[in-house]
Image (tube, rainbow, N blue to C red; front, side, top):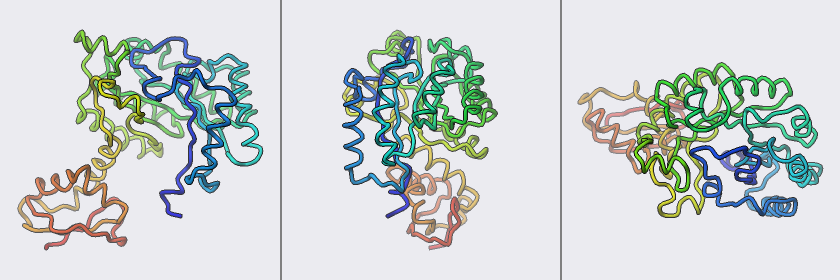
Length: 344
C-alpha cells in the first residue's frame, strides 16, 4: 500500500451547532457540512461507522479515528454526549477504531465532561480558537477571550489530551499584523496541531449581511494564501504541524450562491503548499537571463508542488528566470524541498 493511502484515517461525524451557546457571525454549519445534525443519534453514528469499516479506504494500519466536528461537544447536554460516545464504544472495544477526537470551544471545558471524554477513549480535543486578538473575537461574537484559550490549552495538556487549534484569518477587525501576532501566541502555546480556515462569506450568516451592507471586506484569495503560507512556515518551523488549510467543501456549500465572497478556492491548501515549495527552491534557481532553456529535477512526490495549480508554478519560474522550461523529471536523489536545474 502506498504512503498516501497509509495516512491517518479520520471518520467524521458532523453535529452542526450542537452545544453552541450562540451563532458566530461567520457560522453556517449546516451549509458547510451538508448535515442538519437533527438526525444524529446512536443509530446514525453506528451506521456511519459501519459504512466506514466496509469502505475500501478502511485499514487498521491507518489508525482509524472517529471525529465529532461542527459543534461544541463539551457543551452538549450530558446525556446526549454520553449517547454519542457510547455508540462508538463497541467499535473501540473491538479495536476497529483506535481513538476519538472532538471539537469544542475554549470556554466550554469542565472537569466532569473531560473525565467522561477520557473514559470513552477521546485522545484529541480541537479548540475553535479562531483568533488570539480579543477585539477580533468580540467583533465575531465568539463569546470567549484569548485568555480562555490559554487556560483551555493548559487544562487539556494537564489532562493528557492532544490539543488542536483551529484558526480563521480574515475575520472582522483582523489584519495581517494581528494574525501574525495570533500565530506568535499559538506557537507559545505549543499545540499538537493547527488548522487554518480563512473566513468566507456564507449565505445566511451575519457576515453575509455585513458584506452586503459594506461593513465587512473579506480577504482576497492571494492575500489569504500569503497569510497562510507565512503561518505554516512559522508554525511548522516550531514543530507544530498544520493539518488542514482551507474549508473542506460539501455539496451544499458548493451550490451556486452559497459562498458569496472571500478566498474560496477548490485547491486552496495546495496553493499554499505549492507557494511554500517555491519559496524553498528559490535559491536553487538561476538568475534572470543566466540560462535560456532549463530542465528541472525534483523528487517525484514534489512534482505537483513544483508545477503548481494548472502549471502556474512553472509559469512563475519562467517569469522569474526568463528561461524556457523544457522538461520536468522525477529524481529521488534530489533532497526534499530542493530542485536541480540543468541547462537544456
